[in-house]
Length: 497
Image (tube, rainbow, N blue to C red; front, side, top):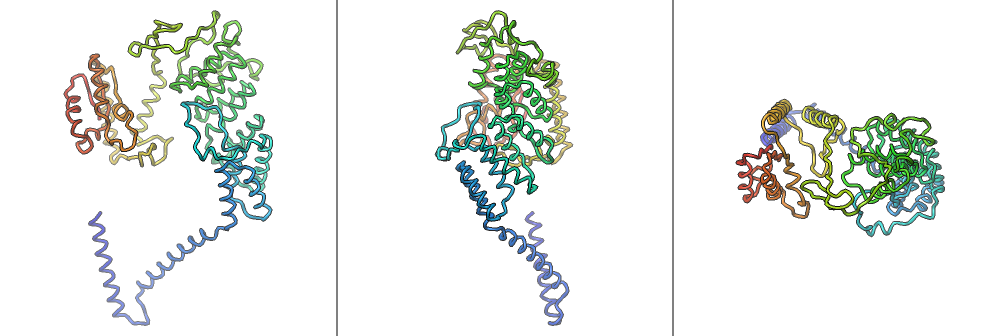
């Protein structure tokens, strides 16, 4: 690149000398044609830049003032003031930008409200959060009326609704106990062009249907989500489970528990309490539980599998019993054998859940797609995420595919002899608890080595997967070199980098 720059600089200097020579030899009344052309091109470029700059500067200051005042209201969650500024702008005939309408709808929804919290407890509110103004004096019905007045204005002006705007309307209606209208808006969003639907819109309606105990509506909505590859999270599963407990539908409970166990590693306290509610309810008795068909609340007599399709997640077992259920809290588990040490299931063993054939094939298909297409079609972003910067693209696709095919063939050969019993994700182990200020850029080789030695003592054949950069002398500290040399000389350990 430096050579190319030097050549370009030399060429430019040569052209400049030629132009000066032409100017000396040409008539003063007839400038060289080449110079006239250059001047004209430069003039046009300056003209375009000036026009673009002037367009940015010509935004009406009053429009900017309205925009900034509404945005300030969003920061403080001040719907009253935002509506006042909005009406003032309307009365003065000031044009209001589409984004400002979206902000107003979000304020009608309420920017300080929180629903069911899922996961680990959140830290206490920051000073900014504590300073937000409460809009509790505005009732949900009033919020709905304000939102639909804004919607009517947007419709009259033919302003397109964004996903954010649709979501705000749906949430406002759900809080106003207008679940039927919320579903209508959701249906409009589903048929709207250029709208990428998100889980949050469905989540609000699921919660509303759960509170109304409309199980058939929930299942219908769940089906629509799955059709669009939108998968529920623990929050949605918890709401569905609550409704199933209220209406006493054992089949829905069984399906939710299966999918929940597949998608969520550790359920939250709220979800755990709902699960206990089911097993302490009279519906958990085989004689009291509803059959596999949905009854009064269904709208049609059919079973859950026919509505949602079969799940690949294994069933968690029967959710009804003639003899009732016993509960034990704080049970200890032998992490080596998986045996429960106390409680009502003392001396029983936890059963490992195998990866289903369908999931295994899907995982293999996805791996093939990533290697052969340099990524997934569903992830078009140029960035890797997690602050890792831009994705690195392979310079030689054919070579990458050749290496991949060779690696798969090598794996197939390992099954013939003694297959691997343990696969270690070296980076995950090595970066464990390494996310702190001024942490080293390299993995903790001692942590990886501790795990390797643990399974070596158990006489396991180990496959360690670790990127080749972690073996680079430039990155690896000197004290780690003997550790990696020991790994390479270990008969029971194979390193893939």
